[in-house]
Image (cartoon, rainbow, N blue to C red; front, side, top):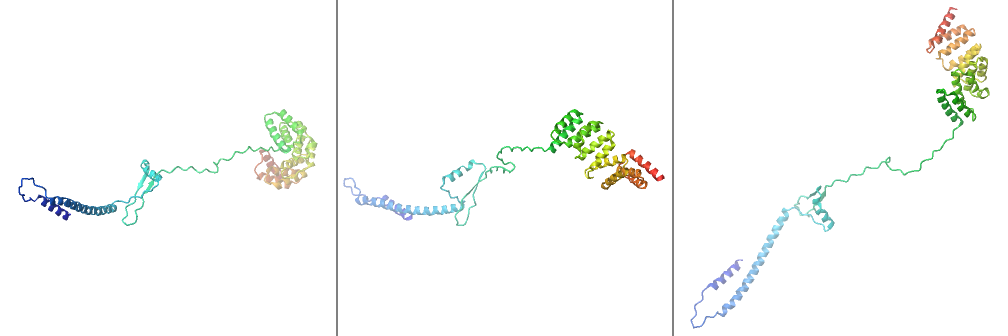
Length: 342
């Protein structure tokens, strides 16, 4: 730059230096030819110097720019590399519309490693997950309704069902309808349960003759309960001997037939067969010796058979047990007083 300024200043001084006056010849003065040749040379020199100065200036400015650019890169945070995918640029450009989205940029790095890309995080609300479908809520395929298999009733089940129907009718004092229902069933089977239901109700009502009509001997011999009911009906009509004979004809085991054996022991005592009655009471007490009434029955049978001492022990045992009716309790106390008095 100093060479260019010096050259320009020298050129200006030469141009401004006054020329020596020429001798007047009466003609206009002409521009010297040497001066005219100097102007293009000076102009060319100016252009060359200007070009050199411009190139130097440009080189200096470029270095300054590079220095400034390097400083700016160190002071500014790294910029994430943009992908050439249009879909990604579209998604980022739409990020400001999503208020829940946040753009987080990593801190600038000071090492020469390449700057990491800018991470884009969308803080969007997760879609609600549908609750798992349990096995209980699972939809089962529709199936055809199962056909209900009708089980054919046996004679025993029919008999029990009719017995329940008879019980309902008898509670309403509808004996005639109950008899008609039983008669219809007897046309098909023996119906021991239904027979017993109606016969027992008739005995309670004080109608033993009608009860006997429903309990014919040939049809009741194979069923202990029906034999028992017929014997009570016979006793109610005054036929003690026939009742005892019926009960003694087929004596069932104790298990499941306690009522039958108690009735037999009582009727044997009434019939004057004290020894047989005592045997029946003894057999009953072997199953349950806590029955006070059974001890009374044994005492009566033993006393009637002339066994006073054994009878006293039986009455004493009966008095020591609970469950005696007031009348039986009075009878026991009386018999003990007499036996102890001798």
